[in-house]
Amino acid sequence: MSLRLLHYSDVENAYDDPERVGRLAGTIRDLDGPDAIVCGTGDTTAPGVLALQTRGEQAIDFYERVGTAVETFGNHDFDFGYERTLELVERSPQHWLSANVYHPADAGTATDGGDARADERFGDAVGVDPLAVHTVNGHRVGFFGLTDPSTPDINPHARALAFTDPVVEAERAVAELRERGVDFVVCLSHLGRGDEELAASVDVDVVLGGHVHSERVEYVDDTVLTRPGVNGRVALEVSLPDKEVTRHLADDGPVDEPLATRLRDRFDTTGLTDVLATVEDPVERTEKTCFRGESRIGNFVADAYRWAAREAGYPEPIVGLQNSGGIREGPALAGEVTLADLVSVIPFEEGVAVLELTGDELLGTLAEADASVGFGDAEADWWHAHVSNVRLEYDHGDGELVSATVAGDPVDPTATYRVATSEYLLHTAGEFPSLHEGQRVDTLDTQYEVLAAYARAVGVDPELEGRIVRTGL
Image (cartoon, rainbow, N blue to C red; front, side):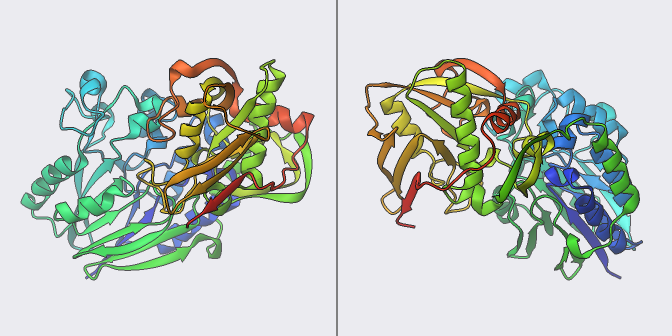
């Protein structure tokens, strides 16, 4: 007799479209049955507009409707602080599994991915376990959960937690599960590209993955690795023992009306429906517009940051800079654009920081937009900067910044430039490592508040201007 794993991950902004997440739930419910186990692999409580308003509570509505059995944590599941994460876990119906996250007692020694361990695993008191065994259709299936150990670097709200080496923890978990005589071992992973190392290092049958937003179905030796992508577009079905994977497009599925209605009701209470601008030429928010170079949505965000710094009285030259990953994919900005629409572009409670950089530091920062510089979870041709008041050329063949101008003039290595950017970039070494806290001179409003103010004052009508030229791809 066979069994099926139903896999979703990185639901994120889908909650802001009740019909979309309703179709994801409807798809999973249609697939579910006595031979199936519903599995989640992180970033299912945040980010998003509704997530900001409910502090992740909207995810419980989803979990209850799809009957999630097992889940692990993603980096965004700590967006509202780990105490709030624990509250959500305690109220969730599924069994949360986490083998490499620990409470703060030893946090300072473990965030580098080493094997330092705190006194207590994260969530012990509310039922989080490192591993579990579920019996379905006569098969004993062992599960364990892992989260990217760089989470404290990419999410400041998780900085107090300890994240240990996922391969070391996986070896412990697999050994225990094999000793228990399970028929299959399944890893619930939010490691992103770390899944390959895990599959090559540890005796697992299935790695259900997340974190990276592109879809994936691949095999490493006899291990199947899956990722359903982002924003609730796809659910994956893994059959065992044959390890065949079936892709189910949620847009083709039925709407789970109780869930969609519940989310609409929640959204109606947010007070974010004020119209700020009217857009005639839709501004797209896709993977291509976020990560492939200059785009209208990137120009809009970077221009808004620069405008806000100028409005705050900072002298020119001012540069606007937005990291590509901070702009969330979603429906195009079109027609009447509301405050909720702009919150969904950058749904984080972080401010716009004003920095002072030398020209030399600015050139170094712009050179770090190449995906090959850091960015362990990036696609090979991704680009990680959107800019305002800058024109640059980057040669990917040689891996170097060819030229850069600010306000039409070549960057002077000894001059001082003001840079308005996401506060997040001061907290992480994974993106634009040349930026740091010591360069901050001010913090303006929250990023989406800056977008809203700019939309009210200027409108939403960005253009492509040749700000970024990429060669050698």
